[in-house]
Length: 144
Image (cartoon, rainbow, N blue to C red; front, side, top):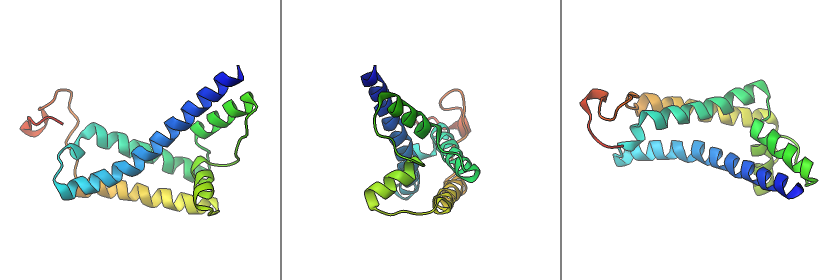
């Protein structure tokens, strides 16, 4: 049973890392795509998903809430008898990778600034409207 808990904990960790990569790389692709003329970066579903993802992160940091994925991963690891880390996922890994320990407000500020950049991307690089059928928005028949 312990192995099952560890496998699920690792899956949650990979899911969490994927979420972080989506948020960070997504914004880089939006700005880079604007400069390179990529039209897919204007996809309404992609942009809305990206906005919601960073909004969740910013809201959690303002409320001082540890990410539920971190909480779930740590619970699963504890059930398996594995080592757990205290605090937030990003803070832990930034400290582990960069050996940099910062107060929680620094991460809240970083998340907030990043969220503001995502909002700025909506103003500078407008997404296409979300429609039910491809090609309905503004007579645009291009494939995303």
